[in-house]
Image (tube, rainbow, N blue to C red; front, side, top):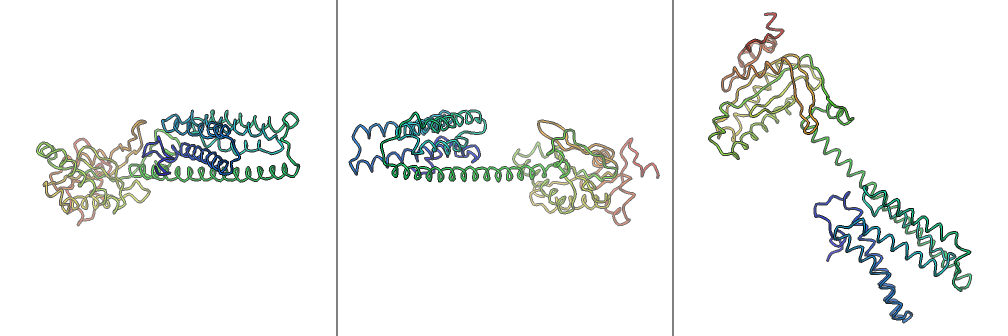
Length: 399
């Protein structure tokens, strides 16, 4: 079995690094501890310095606990496995410190273990990690102040000093490695969070204006804004009900996707804002992004949307034709909802645009009086002037 697969035992293939880092780290430590003990046993066998009983004890105390922790973790019991491994390191260090005495400095191995403890548990288990780290800290303090109670092994002062220096050096290296690994995990987590935020912002930016994304990120609710002069374009597929009855569902979705994708491209090219889709109707607006509101730009957008449908092979294969309405006036735009956020628009301009679209025949672009008033003669020749029943725009009132 490859090392990578061994380290990820019990994890789903699609498990995110942030969710699985502590499991991979635990498996690595279990393998490292077992390998160290087995290597020590092999060296002892080659030099014939250890009895059979000593080897059996080393196997039982140094290999079984970390491998048991690995098996438990692979079966999904990550927290139990982490606690078992930390207790194993605590007892192993305690046994070595008690055997050789505090003058060897073996108790200082609790320091890197304390650092590593916080990387063995997921974020939701921080209280457990804190309790286990506190247990290791208490053990370290106990052995540090027990020099008068624990007798040292009979060794020459030089040997004691050399062993102390070796242990302190190894502890320093282990602490440095643990700290580096923790910093690496922190940096990776930060980068992953930044990437996740960028993807979230990009997704929100695809459905919401940038100013609303920034406001929502700050935790505001009921985000809305009033725009005194906006031109709204409503583009509807003519005869869609008949098309939906005759064609398969996959074909309908394919036609809608081709049509709306063409409209998206035109809006992006002309700097317009897509507001929403309502059934087979596509709603866009000019004048929301801080630029100068322009009914002429909205009419240009409408004509380009109609032309895009005429150029689309998928639309032409199904004989798709559109009706377009354009209205100009005041609107209120905002984000509503808590479960599924929806960006929507209300006001005179959008009411006028929908009314104009209803009056249009296939391939016609019908505009309200307020839009008509801003058009030049050659632009008026490409559209039809319409008046919604019961609606009086400011331009109509002056006429």
